[in-house]
Length: 429
Image (tube, rainbow, N blue to C red; front, side, top):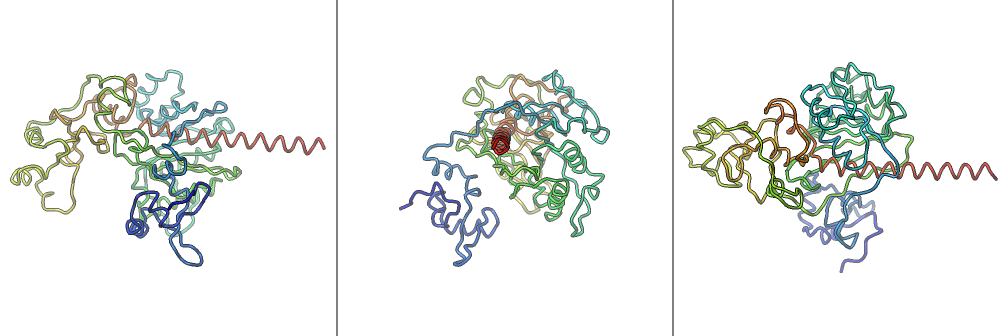
C-alpha cells in the first residue's frame, strides 16, 4: 500500500513505479539511458529520485496534490518588466505578456518580423537591427528579466573554463553581454533540444561557464520542455536555460506540465483551445508530382504507406539509407498533435500535409498550431510569414514559462520585504 509522500524529497524506485504507473524495469532503463537518472542512496546504493525530477510528470503532481493539477497561473504582485532579444515574430513576448509581464523593449534583426511586432503591438519599443550595434546599459536596474532565443553556435572550448570574451563572434556572446549590462534578476535562454548534445555537450557547458563568470547561477538540470504538455497541439521541444543572479538565494522552478494533450483538431476546429474554426488564409502548394504522391498517403501515414515502387521513386537514394525519416511524405491526423513545424511547410524532409486536403497547412493554420491568436497578423511575403511562425516559441508554452517567472519574482520581492522589515525592527530595538 502506497503511503502519504507529500512532504518527502526522495522517493524509492518502487514508490516511483507505483506513482507513475511504470514498471521498475522501465525506470531502470530510463536511468541507464539518462531519460530519468536516479541518485544512489549512500549506504545501500539503491536507486532514489528527487521530488523536483518527478514534478515533470503530471501523474506525480496529481498524486501529491490529491487532484488534477490546477496549472501554473499566478498573478503578479507588481509590474515586472522584460527585455527580449532575438524576438522574432513575438511568440515568446506575447506569451510572457499573457502571463502578466511587460515587455519594455524587443530587439530583432529581421525587418519583416519587426513589422509584425509593430503592427500587433504599436506601443512596444522595437529595436530593429543587429544586436551588436546596441548598448543596453540604460536598462540596468530597470528590467527584471532578459530573454533571448539565441542561435546555437559552436565556439572553441578545449577543456577550459570559458569566460565571456572566449565566446566573441557568436550570438550567445551578445546575449551574455546584454545580461551583463542589464543585470536582471533572472535571465532566460531558449534554444533547440540539440543544444544539449551540440559538440558533445561542450557548447552548453561553455555557456553555463560564461553565465557563471558574469554572476549567474544556471538552474540545473537544464530542462527540455515539451510543448504538448503546455497546451500546445504540437510535438515541439525547446531547451530552456535559466540563470538566477547570484545575490538572489531563491530557487527557480520550471512550469508544471498539464495532463491534457491537444491534437490537430483542437488547433484548427472550434473547441477548448479556440472559440472558432481556423480562418481561411493563403498558403503554399505542392508541385503536381508531389501532390500525386501525397494523395496516396492516409492520415497519420508517411512514405512507407506508399506502394514499394512509388517509395523508391519518391525517396530516391534516401530509400536505401538507415533511419525512419518519418517526416517525409507525412500526412498529419486529426487525432494527434502536429509534428514540429519548420520554416517551410513543403520541404521534402519535413512535410506536414493537411489531414483531408493534399496541401501544406496555410499561414493561419500554422499560426494556430503555434497557438498564436487569430488577430496576430504577420507581415511580409507568404514565405516570410511561414518563416516567422516556424521560428517562434509557441505562445501557450511561453505563457506557462511566464507564470513560472512571475512566481519567482513574487517570491523575490516578498522575501525582500521580509528582510527590510527585519532590518527595520532590529534598528528600532
